[in-house]
Amino acid sequence: MIKHLLAYARTGRHNPQPTDLNAVIQDSLIFVGSSVGKSCELELKLSKPLDAIVADRSQLEQIVLNLCLNAKQAMPRGGTIVITTRRATLTAAQAARCMPYDIRPGDYVEMVVMDTGCGMDDATRSRIFDPFFTTKSDGHGLGLAAVLGILRQHHAAAWVESEVGKGTKMHVFFPAKR
Image (cartoon, rainbow, N blue to C red; front, side):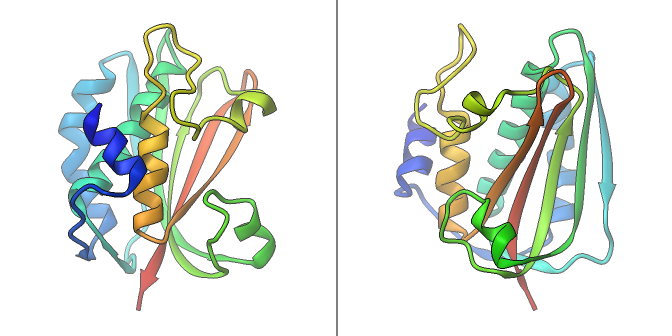
């Protein structure tokens, strides 16, 4: 819980280095797979080649784990989690939809974590990054708040697509290192 609070407050340790996001995702699969359980199928669609990003590897692993755990929790009867990476160019209008709001248009490396779960209504989606906001009786509401703090440290952002009954796509954009 302390790590989540520090990540949200952006005061945790931060060791940015040129990083291959695909490698981080692949290296995280054993831990992510055991955390989401056998009721969820994990599928990867990783674009190659992919630009490097400047990031703290352990914090990227935390993002991948938190997003996959949220996806699993949205699918209590099981389902599929798809992690996709690709190059992306954000326009000013697309950047304006992202959290935090100070992301700039330009070239990014995008990671999408998609689930086939219950989805969210607009009211829930608007609050998911709020500290201590949760829809789960046993939740703390710190996972996505921590993700937002890590994204701020990396000058990165997220945009959420979700529809009740149709699942969720969490788009995460990291500045491309070219």
